[in-house]
Image 1 (cartoon, rainbow, N blue to C red):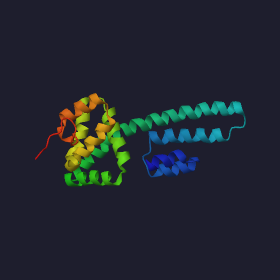
Image 2 (tube, rainbow, N blue to C red):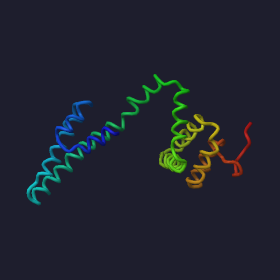
Image 3 (cartoon, one colour):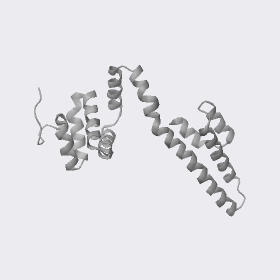
Image 4 (tube, rainbow, N blue to C red):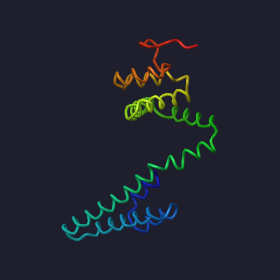
Length: 180
């Protein structure tokens, strides 16, 4: 993401080419080159009418580049990261990464993120799978995850998720059971 941000902030074609030299050439390169050329031309516009025409060109070039980037990033995880992680990272290391991320993130941000993910995934079993994955990686924090969800989800979603993952119900709430 830092490289993508740097590409967006590049001010000259040479700078954009230099940033692309370390990355993949091809469609991304031509899309970015066209976008950078349109941005440069917009900066050099002499009249307001010419600026309006060039602004439309920048928007058109930016839309093509953005479409390519979105398609690329949508499939990056399933094509590149997941198989690599499964092949080269042992399970204990994956759990350790989740724990370190949990420890490094402020509680309010973490609660907002867990609630947002659980609210926005479209299917019920995806919500359950997400919550189970967190509880599986950190079973000692299951009730804390449940408390975060209880405070941020609507009642119907909370009841349906807590029915499928009963270990997340915080102590004292309806549905809590003591597990040994």
